[in-house]
Amino acid sequence: MSVHTSLIPSLWFDDQLEEAAAFYCALFPRSEVTWTARYGEAGPGEAGTVMAGEFVLDGLRFRAINGGPMFHFTEAVSFVVECADQAEVDHYWFGLLADGGEESQCGWLKDRFGLSWQVTPTRLGELLGDPDPARAQAATRAMLGMRRIVVADLEAAADAAAGGVG
Image 1 (cartoon, rainbow, N blue to C red):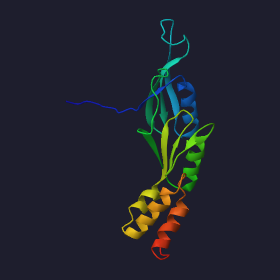
Image 2: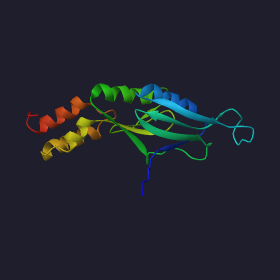
Image 3: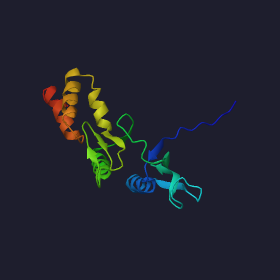
Image 4: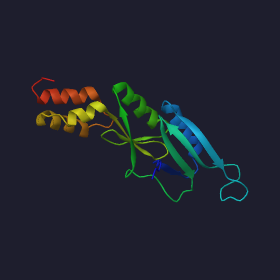
């Protein structure tokens, strides 16, 4: 039996789907809104307003609805933005915080819609998994004191634990 299965994250917004999709598409490359459906006279939303839609962020499809205020995003679900370097970390960190986002710690933040993101450089995983336990622990301690991940500070902490050898 040949079955094509797709896994697509689905997001529930109160009434900000159109605004959120435009915000995310402007921030991530290879992104676009692919379709929207609007409420008609039958409701339950106001006729002409966006009911549901789909958008692509850097090649990943998302579906979303404007379902009303019953459900809210929590930190229990987040999206990881894996970044090649500090410039990418800064681009996504400050971009996702724009216009009312909220910093957390260890690379976590909430955007202005309440959606949680982890903005992490690939170097973070390398340092946390360093075969030298002292370097790994020093990088972990440094990360735990950060909000936005700063690669140079992680590397400096790891190098100091290894006696200055990186």
